[in-house]
Image (cartoon, rainbow, N blue to C red; front, top):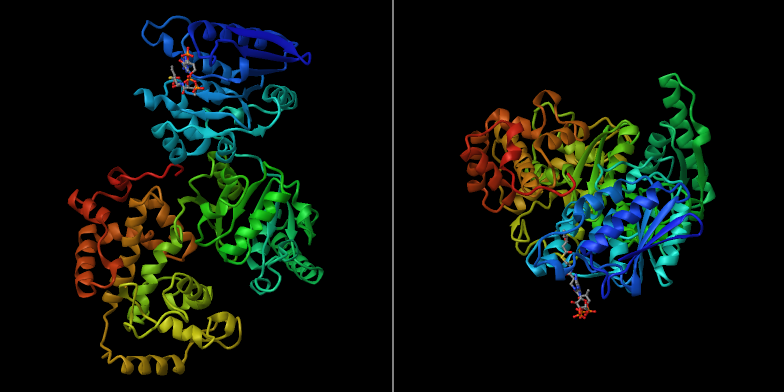
Length: 636
Ligand SMILES: CCC[C@H](O)CC(=O)SCCNC(=O)CCNC(=O)[C@H](O)C(C)(C)COP(=O)([O-])OP(=O)([O-])OC[C@H]1O[C@@H](n2cnc3c(N)ncnc32)[C@H](O)[C@@H]1OP(=O)([O-])[O-]
């Protein structure tokens, strides 16, 4: 029922022989157990390959034995023992690996599939669930949502899809068994721990990383030849410094020699100042600067920090897929773009993750690690552990526009814009100062991309409303005047120079406001500090409740950490969610209801269902909110 032979002098080849589909009958299970015992105890054997006779790996539990009592060794402990063994086991999958056959492949440390192979967990079609570890191992390998889809539909997938999902390590057109034997020989010296799918996920050790950025100016004109245009922008420089100062070798990518030299000097200067301050020597020998993407072929990980433009980022990842080794992790430093859409253009979606650094990256503590639906647990664990090594406060978040921090910022800024006043709440800076610092053009571009403003939008039809809700066009008007904030020396405030930080009220903004109000017949009235605080901060927390409901953040404390470390939320207030609990959820709900009634065209003021639910449950303390949240993100 299984043939055992030694090939290439050191590989134990176990061939299942139970026609027609090598199902796991009691005799087959018995033969596998005996063969594994031989392989693990024979010192000549350094690796094992399991395959099936006649071009079929294994069709699963033997349906013909379903009616009778269980005989022979049970499958689960047998599979656990294969996974736990100290010699690498490679599955050579030809034909089918279904049900228990797929589960057998999942306990092997590596999986090689023939291009025509099909894999799946069809148990649901028989009215049962996978019972030999598939429901546990598959989600660990490819994430809950992808695994759940396969388990609940029973769908068979092709070898190519299995490769994309990260289920198999290699697809071959040749004899899968022969390829697997060669693969097994190469796997002999490698550590097995991270290959055991059922074991807790271990992060990879990152020794070398590449950081690449593209300046906005490079967006147009050169885009056809991406290999030539990468350039180390502000974020890229900060990230390179963070990596080098913790002992990781860094290749920083620039687009041309002139930019390369400027970038090199800036990074070296930053590292030297940092080392002096800390009383250590600067790790300059870890840095390499290049204008060739080919130099990235051997790095463990790439952090892409190009200009925030989806088309551009996609092209970068397509190029990286061609250049880098298949095992290289790809991280995108984006402040809100769809990480999964980027993963989708690569040849390794499971190795793609978001790393949202905050500017300046070598100073700001916060790092949002954005888990795409296809990011593998190992990829996320590696990004989290790399962030830890870089001294960051890491928060794993889900993938949605703006993730956690920037998604919550939108209703907060909206309220401030509607009010056009500053609150005095103890924030490191008010909304308008913060917007000037971040750059007003950033939000303007996002609004244009989402069709809220721009040349295609008629601002008067209807006025002050867009996409069925209230819209304040004043920020657009400020941007149209070329006032992008501190970097242009003018924004909501005026500054002594470009890049200056000394903000003064600008009479021109006052004139703009007055003209605007008179055009639309708006009678300005006094707004109390209390209303300013309530509308801004309760809208902020309200979005936080929605984020919890959507499973984008795992717990309210994570949201608070993001706001404390990334957005200057006053420490003594504990973060927006803790603040809401201190004010009292009932009060927050009552005020939001009040403001939503007064402004029914502002959906962000509508109390979230989770807030209502928590109030209905007697307003439990923050640490108990999790018990009331239905949606849990697979990776958080
Ligand atoms: C602890 C348990 C854990 C586990 O989670 C539970 C399971 O694995 S549940 C199991 C999960 N697995 C499944 O649900 C797989 C169900 N099987 C299939 O989907 C298709 O048969 C397969 C795709 C394999 C081949 O399709 P195709 O090329 O169109 O060919 P075909 O359809 O004409 O079949 C050819 C011959 O193979 C025979 N046979 C097939 N499977 C088994 C089996 N498991 N056993 C025995 N025999 C099996 C079939 O009866 C037929 O025999 P015959 O004497 O010539 O009449």
